Image 1 (cartoon, rainbow, N blue to C red):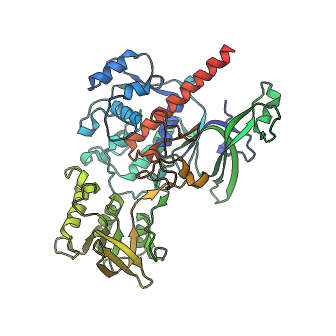
Image 2: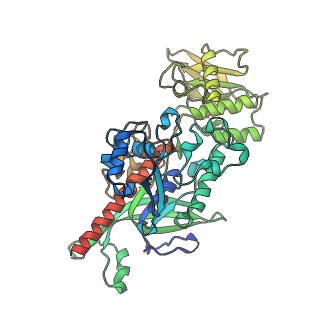
Image 3: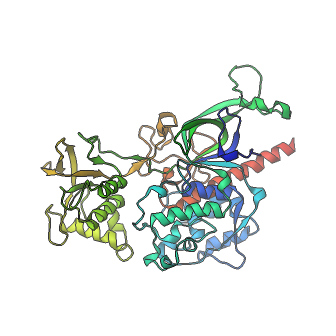
Length: 501
C-alpha cells in the first residue's frame, strides 16, 4: 500500500514508490482517478441500450463490470467522432445516440468497490480541473453541459437553480471548473490529488528488486548500475519536479512510479506564427492577456483596432469579447470562409448562435472592408501575417502575395496550443506518430495501443485526452476506462503468477 502523505508533501529522496502516477489534473486525470479508486460501471439490470448489438454483447457478461470485460470486443463495429475505439465505446455507453441530440438514459449503473482500487497520485499545477480554471468565465462551452460531465454526478446538480434551464444545456467554463472541483470532493478523491506540483523530468531507471524481507525493502530505491552484480532489477519511472508553496517557494521532489499516465492536455504552449516581430510586447497569445488589456484600458473603443489571428473557437471568443466592448477588430485567417474544414461550417446554427454570428461577420467582410452590418469589424480571409513592426504596423499577405499594412493597438495570435512535454526526452516527439515532428493533438498525437492507451514505444507509460487526439471531455473518459482495464487485468495476472509459484 502507498503510504499516506501528510499535507501532500512529496519526498525529495525517492523513498516513495507509486503504483500509478497521473500527470495532469483536468477532466482526464479526474476521471481516471475515479475509476482507479474502485468505482465500477455495470450494465443496469433494468436498462437497455438503443444499439441492439452492443446490448447483446453487454448481456453476455452482465455480472462483470465494463472494466473487467473485453473492450476490443465491445467496441468492435461502433462509430463515433473519436479515432480511439474505447473512447467511442464509453461515450456510446454514457451518452447513447448523443450525436443525434437524443437524451437516452445511460444503461450503466455505478458501484464503489474500494477493494478493486489501485493506489495513485494525481499531479497538477493548479486546483483540480486543469485548464478549465484558467478559461474565460463568461463564454459558453462548445459542448453541451451533459457532455462535460464525469460519471456518477450530474452537472446540473452543481449549478445554481437559475442556470438549470440554460439554452441548449450549455454552461460557462467557470461552472465547469467548479463542477470538477466539486466532483473530486464529492467522490472522495482529494487524497489522491497533489496541486501546485510541476513535473520537470521523467525517465526510466532500473532499481534493485524489492526484497521479501521487510527490513531490506529500502534498497528498492538504489540504482542497479553495476552490470553483472547478479541482483534482480525492475524498471521504474523516476519522477522529478517541484511543489510550489502558497508563499511561492519551490520545493523539489523525487519519487518513483511503476506506471505513469500523461493527461496534461494541450493548452500549455500556444502555437506561434514564427514571423518577424512576434516577440514584440504588443503581441499576445492568449485571450486572458486581451481581457487584462481591456481591464487596464490599454485597448478601448477609441484605440486602434485589435488584430485577431485565427479562425478557431478561441479566436471567435476574442472577436465576441471585442465586439461586446466596442473595440474595433481586424480579423485575419488563412482559410476561405466557405472552407468545409472551418469549424463554423460544422456547427449547427440553432445550437451555437454566437459562433454563427462570428461566421456571418467573417462572411460579410470577405472584401476586407468595414460595413454597416458589423461596424468596427473587418475580416481578411485567406490572409496570413507576414511580419509585425516596432511601430505597431502589421503586414498581412493574401494568398496571391498582395500585401496590406494595418495599424493596430495589439495583436492576438490565437491559432491553437500544443502540449508542453519538456520533462520528456526530445519533448516527447519520439512518442508521436511522426518522431520528426513536435507533438500535436491535431497533426501528431502520441502513438498508443488502441485499447489500453499504452504508448507503443514505452511500456508502462500511458497517455489520454487531447494528447491522443481526444479533444472533447466526452471522449477523454474512454482513456480512463482503457487504462484502468489494462492495469487491473495486469495486476490480476501478476497475482495469479505469484500464487502459481
